[in-house]
Image 1: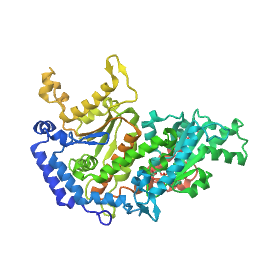
Image 2 (image 1 turned 90 degrees about the vertical axis):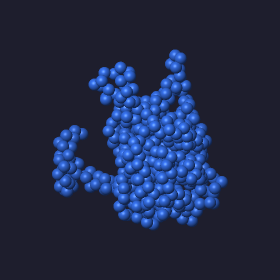
Image 3 (image 1 turned 30 degrees about the horizontal axis):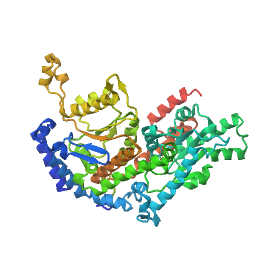
Image 4 (image 1 turned 90 degrees about the horizontal axis):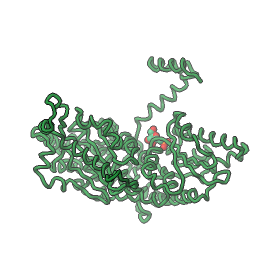
Length: 565
Ligand code: F6P
């Protein structure tokens, strides 16, 4: 059921069938080597070519029967119905009583009029805002937009946190090769004063623009950093005599150097940013699903509107594929369902994402918010407790760096950690080291790792290399460590958009099976509330200190004794 009472997946006959199948596999023994040997159809039947991406699911601990049973489970709990309800604007975010429509952000303008949300034409609204963002981006890129002293903008600084930072920061890093207007980007997120200090270091205030991004425009970190950045800008401009420090000159400087992105345009105005320089979005876009809304304004500026359009088109291509492909043939749905298989049957609570592409080094961090803020829940969307384990830990680092760090545990540790490998055939930086193509050296490592994880190395194979008997056990790789490979043609705005949408939908599938509202995030609230109560105890208030527990008091005592400024 899409909303109302979730179907308890664990109580369905489809779950019981999966459990029986799992027990059977355990009894027979799982061997990818044997499965590959016995079934020449395994690889073709588990390979899915979608747009410019190849999904290879064959190195997972599944047989074709497992995939049948997982697809049956998805059907039984209503994964497809819930996605249709989501696309139609039903309020599937029940605890906030909101529609969930990030998919509307990338629908083409030709679909205007097909999606009414609370009386508004959502697709038309999206394109009206995109038009304003593209105009603004072109003005900044062409130098028509000038800073207060008449100079063109050279650096754009995004101030935001969580979904208002991770998506744009990750995408900027991923697509830096496409930044073609001589404008660079920086990102300030942490309330740690070091972050702002590090990011404004060396900047020329006359050529710097800040984009303050906050869905709510109440987030402590962002509003504090925005105020600090405004102070930095005005002080620096006054120091050099670029402005005279009068109220009018300060107002002019802010209006030329600050823009905002928010759903709360009233608070933007109260902050002092001209509403003409603000881009809105809607409460049906969750923070961690917002990189393709006005939250991506910095990307439109630095990469240009046409690349931003390609990025949206990549997302839309995956939305259409996911929506229109039956679960059993749907690579994205199967990835989500296999995650449930690993979490709830193998009790594997960790999931690695390993991009073989240095430009994607922030992708795992981006996914951590997407997946864990979405599915790290213990109650279902009707408030009842979940009935199985939910929400695995996502983490990762680019290869080959990770190979020299934590892969030891992936290969030989006692926990089984499913991993997604993401790689691209082409690089924008082709290089040769003598006769060796460096990209081929790199991709050889990607392929070697997935092969080693799947097939391992037996004691006999180790012995045959002449290894002394006492160290044979240490050199055995048991294999059967599951991986999925996503192999693309090239990392482009389009394929980055595809990757983001793929993981959004994987997250959706897992949440739908578990009966979770993947679109709220109440778990972040308590810490925010307590920080407000505790902060006064750090310096001034003994009354506030007295209210704290013994451990917090002791830590504050250490702080008070050692503070030196
Ligand atoms: O505290 C968590 C969170 O609400 C995220 O969900 C969100 O992406 C982030 O804070 C930033 O929120 P905002 O965009 O409203 O500043």
